[in-house]
Every structure is written in structure tokens, then in C-alpha cells.
Length: 252
Image (cartoon, rainbow, N blue to C red):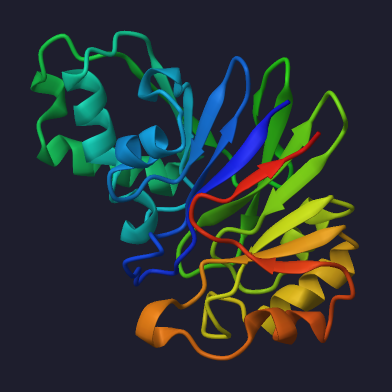
């Protein structure tokens, strides 16, 4: 049965215990990395996932705290002998910037570099990103400072559903994307432009009628403040938890 591993849970400013937010959906035949920061190969190794098992990378948007690890991931995989393709999915806005960033490293001149296949997603609600024997993943545009997507992951064997908000203000697109999900993983960076407070995340969870809520992309270290779980519970009556680095969500 696929499992979702939280590789990082902090907002844009991490601390020694919390890396920037990114996660991984691990199945028997496909391993999907969602956003890519720091040195993802090291964090994959820590949770017992082989780097060569990674089949897909979904980039929600192009801010550095979500894509800064892409050059290291690609370079390290190349140096460690990868040969089979890696699929990368994202909006045009995101993938265009990834190509420019990699161009700065002259990646087209890396000898015997493995194939990288870009899949440009339309900014439409419930776009099918990928589908395999174990799960299907959909994207919808959300409301951030730049074009960004949230995700809906549907597990086929037991029909469990996990939704991920990405960075966003509260929006109806996300409520529809997360409708009826067993788990909603929602950012709680605060109520600034392009982001959501824990209380607002609780309200989104209530409107979407999800089973439980995990707060992620929240302020950590010296910037942490308040009881985010309690704030969310003011509006959502189901279970609320803080996502933590290396937390695994199993869906038996």
C-alpha cells in the first residue's frame, strides 16, 4: 500500500529540526517526490528509499523553498549512475524557470546524462497529473503569489484520498480539490498575502468535509508562535496534527 512520507515541514525559513516543506508518495512501482529542496537524496536515504526508485517529481511552484534542491538532485543522480528517465511535472511558469536554472549549470553538456521528461500541466481544476496501478494524482490551481498548484492523491486499492494545499490563500479551488478527502495537508504559514493561517486551514478543512487535517509549512524555530493545532480546532472538529519531518502516513 502506498505511503506518504513528510521529508520537510517548515515554511521558507527552516531550522535544525525542520527542513523546507516537501514530501514523497512511495508505492511499489512508482515513487513521487513532491517539491525538491535541500539535498533530497540524503533525506530519501534516511527514510530507507533508494534514490534510483524515484520515478516522478511534481513541482508545485517555483519559489526557492520548493525547488532549490532540483540541481543537486539531478546532478547527484547523474553522478551516482542513473540511466532511466525522470518525469517532472509542473505548470509552464514553473518548468520554464527550472529549465533556465538548469541552463545556468549547463546541464545539456553533462555527458551521458539520463533523460528528463517535462510534463507541462494546464492551470485547470482536477487536471490528471499521473496515474499508475496504485494511485492517481490530480492538480488544481491555487492562489499564491505566483502560479501554483495543489494536489489530490487517490489511492486505488482502498480508495483513500490525500489532498495537499501547497502555498495558498484560502480558496474555493482548494475546497473542491480536497472535497471528502481522508487527509488534508494544509499550509499554515500565517494569514499573509498568498498564505493561510492555521485557523483558516481549519475552516478550509471544515468546508471540504475532510477526515483529518495536518498542518504543514508553518513557522519553526525562533519564528514559531502560538498553538497552531488549537487555532485550527476552533473551526474544524476532526483530528488536527502538526506534520513533522520524517513522519510517515500509512493508508492501510
